Amino acid sequence: MKNYRNLILIGILTVFMISCSENKKKTQQDEKNTTIKTETKEKLKSFKMEFDKTKISKYTIEDSEIGGAKTIIGKMSDYTTKELKELPSSKRLTLSIVVPYNISKENLENTLKSIVAKKTVEDNNIDEVVIFAYDDKNDIGNGYTFGKLLWAPNGKTGMMTPEIVLNNNRNSYEFKIIIKEKVGNIKKVDLPTKRELEIYNEIMSEKYWDMQEEESEPIIMKKFKISKKELNDIWLKVAAHKL
Image (cartoon, rainbow, N blue to C red; front, side, top):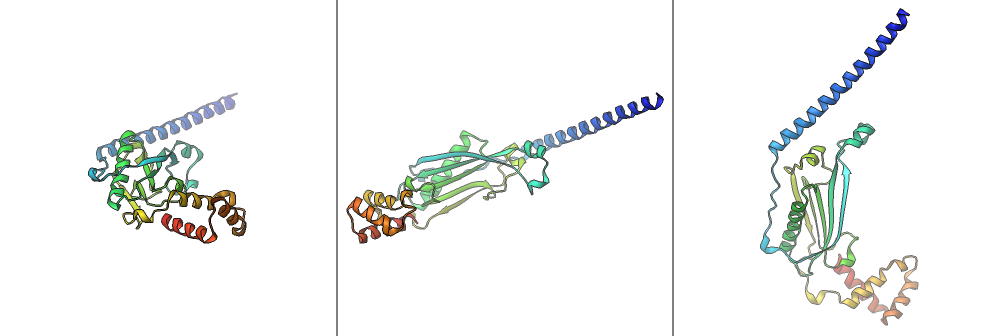
């Protein structure tokens, strides 16, 4: 009986010690998180959106998408399932916009920055912004034809951390903007006409993907009453414009 009681006592002590250890670990982690948040808040600086408000073009937002990802640092295998579940997720806004064909490089850059400024004021929990710029909404989903902006830590993807997300820390944020060389150099006479765009979109339609050119071209030529030379010339003109 004595040995039985000793075993029970040892069991109770073991459970108590494990419980204390887990509570201590949790308390230490909570204190660490609180310290990180407090220290970070003291150092935070708001990201300064510098752009020329007099050089903003008109634009339309044709597509908007909110996404997110866990803020994993290093390898996923370094985390337990519980740790992965508890990691904060970043909030990423992806926009596709259409701008005038004759927009200048300077105006496009300022327009893109102004959109980031507006969207992050509306929702300061947005951690990353990507904007694709086009002059034709039919090109959306196929790369970008005019320009691209990324607003993120160090102007790069994959740099997000839990601390950045939890504290909205924008200290390391930068713009990375790519604008096509043709922007600002497009003349109205070089623009594809509405009919040329219609023919081009017909040529590129998915309904012809399983056909050879010898099969699809006669159908398109008949539909639009054009010759093979006209068909090829239109395709080349519009394709060059979309590069």
